Length: 126
Image (cartoon, rainbow, N blue to C red):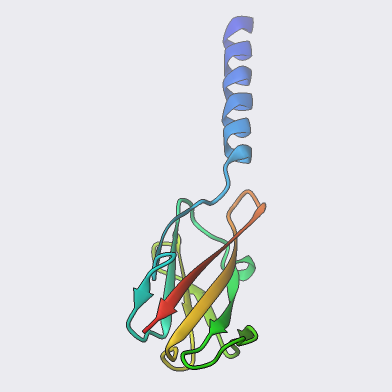
């Protein structure tokens, strides 16, 4: 009986350690990093785990504009963020379709383990 208890306790510790070590990982995005897309008002980030909506989001900057050299990065305002029905998709929406130019999205995500992970990628709107 004592051995069964030790095995159960060891299993519990391993299971807890695995859950605590897991963090949401970005699996894919639309638009994908370093791609050129048609004008869109939606960015989708697909993660490996369900997200905590209140602690996940992003900021978007326009980093280049056609016909302008030395364009200073311009933070896009009015973004809305929500987690999709699957719980693993972060959807960032702009007020209107993004105009032509280069963009960088800085994202952050929190899952049940409460550890914040961050990332960044760029894309171009034609």
